[in-house]
Amino acid sequence: MILISATPSPFARKVRISMIEKGIPFTVQNEVPWHADTKTRLYNPLEQLPILIRDDGDPVFESTYLMDWLEHQYPEPSMLPADRTLAMEAKLVHTIAEGVADATVLLFWEMQREHISAEWASRQLRKVKGGLTDLDRRVGDQEFVVGDRFGLADIAVIALLGMQDTVIESQLIPAWQNYAPDMDAWNVLYPNLKRFEAHHRDRPSVKDTAPFMFDLAEKIV
Image (cartoon, rainbow, N blue to C red; front, side, top):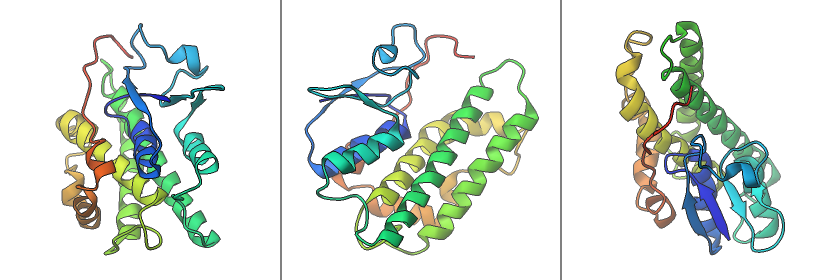
C-alpha cells in the first residue's frame, strides 16, 4: 500500500506510526497538498492528507477515520486498551490532540497573510495553549498516557509535539511576539510533555517518522 503523506503533518505521522507498530508494509509518497501538482484530488474529494492507497479497493483517507480503519482491518496489536473505559479515554486524548493540531494549522495559515487578524490568531493560540495544558496534566508522570502500553493516545500526543517543533518553534514563535509576548517553546511550558516525548523519542516507529518542514513554493492564502 502507498501512504500519501506530508513531511511535517501530525495527521499523516499518526497513521505512519500506527502502521509501523502493527507491522503493516507500506511505502510513503510525500506531497505538498496545496501545490498545483498535488495528486490528492484524485483520491480524496476533500483534497487532504493522509491518504492510504490500498492494493485493492477504494482509497482510505482522513486521519481519524484511517486510525479506526487500521484498528478494524488490522486488529493486532491493538492501539486501544482492552478496557472500554480506557479505550474511550484514549480516544478523548486523540480528539484533544487533533483539535490542537487543527488550531495550529489555522494559526500557521493566518500568519502567512499580509494582513493578520490579531483576534483570530489569539483565539487559535488560546486553543493550542489550552489543549497542551490539558494534555500535560493528563500525561503527568506516566510512561503511557492511557493504560499500560503504547497506543493511540501516545501516538496522538507524540505526533502533535513533533508538529509543535516543526511548525510552532521553527516557523511561528518569532512572528507571534506582537500577539503573545509570553509565548515560549512547548518543552519549556509543559514539563510533563517534555519528559514524555524524551522517553519515547528513540522508539523505532517514533524515530523513523520524525517530521521536518517542507518548502512552500506556491502562495497558499
